[in-house]
Length: 202
Ligand code: PCA
Image (cartoon, protein in one colour):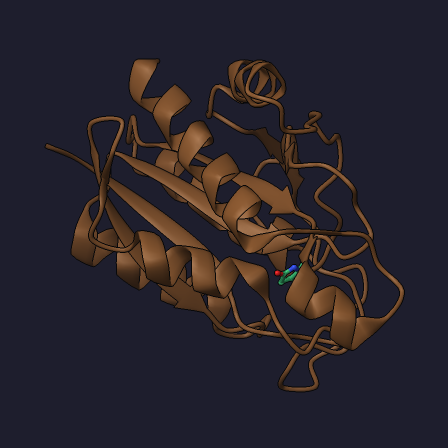
C-alpha cells in the first residue's frame, strides 16, 4: 500500500490550540484512498522543523506528503499553490525571527505544489465544504515546511508528491482566541480525508 506522510503543527503565537495536531493524531495509522497514513506533529521552529520533516521522509519513505497548518482567520480549506524560498516572520516558538532569509541558498525561488489542488477544491465544494486555492502560504513555518518537502523531492529526483493545506481554526481554538472564524473538528477532519481521497484517485 502507498504511504502518506501527514504532518501538523504544535500551537504557536496567540493560537493556544493547533487543530492540525488533533487531526494528524487521529488519522495516524488509518487507510484512506489507498494510502496508509503516517501522522506526525512538527514543532514551530525555523531552526529544526525542516530537519524533522526530512527525518520523517527518510524514515517513512512516503509516496506523498501532505502538510497541514492553521491559518487563523481564514474561512475556507485552502490548498496552497506555491512555496517560496523565503524565511521571514514573527518569533517562532524558540524565539527565532529570520528576516528576508533564504530557506536554501541554492534552491529555486519557488516550487509549485505537486498535489492535485484544483481537484481537491472541486471535490470539497461538491461535498459541501467551503474551499479555495490559496496563492500564498506566507513566509512563516508553513511555507517553510512546504518548501522543504518540494525541494527534497526535486533535489533527490523523487516522484513523491508534496504540498500544503491551510485550514481554519477549530471551535475549540476560536473560543479561546475570541476573534477568528471557526469550523467543527469533525468538518476539518472530514475535509482532510476528502483531500487524501482525491490524492488517491490521481
Ligand atoms: N500555521 C503557521 C505555522 C504553524 C501553523 O499551523 C503558518 O501558517 O505558517
